[in-house]
Image (cartoon, rainbow, N blue to C red; front, top):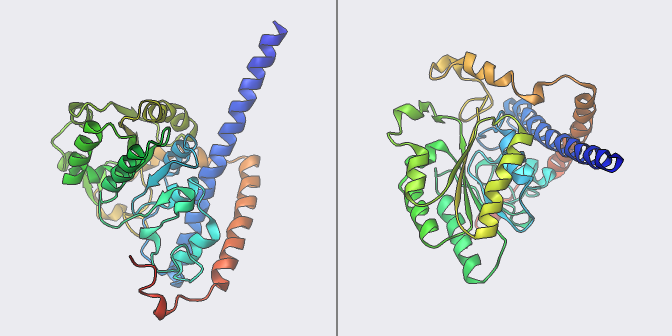
Length: 322
C-alpha cells in the first residue's frame, strides 16, 4: 500500500510541476504583450501588432506536446506560438522595433515572424496562406522518409472560408500527411462573427474529408489544452495522418493594435468578462508575484538588447531575398 501512495504522490507532484511551468509560460507571453502595449504609443514598435492576449493558453498547451523537430506555421497573430515554441525574446523585440539585431534584421516585423531554428516557420499577413506551406513541408518530410515529425498549420476560424483551407484538407487526407490543422476559434474574422460567415458545420465538413475533428472548449486552461491536445498530436505522429483540432478561445484586445474595441459594437464586453473570470492568469497569488518579477527582469534585458541594436540599414533591404 505504501508503494502505491508513493507513486500517486509522485504523479501528483509531476503534474503540479507541469501545471506551474505551463502557467509560467502563459504569463510570460501575456507580460511580453502587455509590454508591447506600454511601448506602442512611443512609436518604438515599428510594426502593426495582432496581440495574442487571451489566447496564450492555446500556444502553451499545444507546444508542450511538440518536439524540437516539429514545425509550426504561424499566422500574423503569432507572438504566443513564437514564444511558446522557444523563440528568443531579445531578437523578438529587436524585430518589432525594426532593428538589425532582430530575427529578420528588422525587415519582417510582428506579422512575419520566423525562427526556423526553433521550428517557427514564417508567418504571413495573408489569411490562411501558411496552411498550404505546412502541407508542403509535411509532404517533403514524407518523401524523405522521416518519421514521427509533425507539422502544425495554425490559423483562426476566419481562415476556414478561404479556398486553400478546403484544398488543404483534401490534399492532406489524400496523401496521409502528418499535419495538425490547429484552429484558434475566437468566433471572429476581424469584426464579423462566425454565424454571419459560415453556413457549414465545422466537424461535419472536416469529417467529410476523412479527417477526425477534436474540439477543446476550455481554451483558457493551459493544462487542459496540454492534456487533451496530446491525443490529437500523438495520433498525427503515430499514424502519419492529419487531424483537425479546434480550440475555443477569446481575444481580449482589438483585431489589430493595443486597444480595446467594445465601442465598435460587434461583440459583448460581458461575454469577454465572463471568459476572463475563468482565466487562471488573473489569479492573485504569491507564486504569480514571484513569476512576474522573474519575467519582468527577462523582458527588461531583452529590451536592453533591442535598444542597443542598430537600426536596420537601407542597403539591407533586398538582402536575404530569394
